[in-house]
Amino acid sequence: MQILINVDVDDLNKAIQFYESAFALKVGRRLGADGVEMLGMSSPIYLLAKAAGTTAAGTTALKRSYARHWTPVHFDFVVEDIESAVRQAVAAGAQLESAVTTAKWGRLALMADPFGHGFCFVQFLGRGYDEMAC
Image 1 (cartoon, one colour):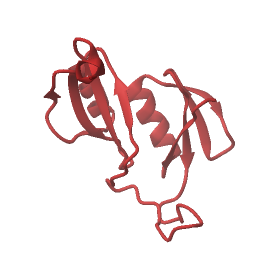
Image 2: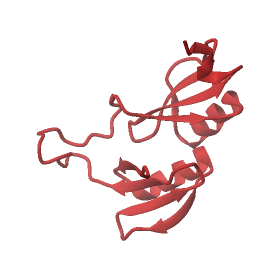
Image 3: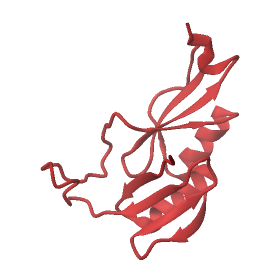
């Protein structure tokens, strides 16, 4: 089984620029006029142009919004140097939503991309998540 990551955006060119600048991803292939494959991580990320205000799914009345929103699913980008990753992402247009915190397992930065999607930077310390394992 394989995982594909799809991210809805309202401006494909702006999204390409952000994901290239913030995460050093590169365009793999264009998928027609409304999609692009971004490569450079363990899984490809597909940016899909979807207009704000369009129906998110046929089974819900929810409409797409690119203002900051919450969802229980988000990206965690594992990085070696969290301060450097935060600086690079903020310079590309991301927002740092709270100060970097440190726990026994590692460091965490809560972020948002320019399209309202939350993501985190994680810098593991010691044994990483194994520090919490029973």
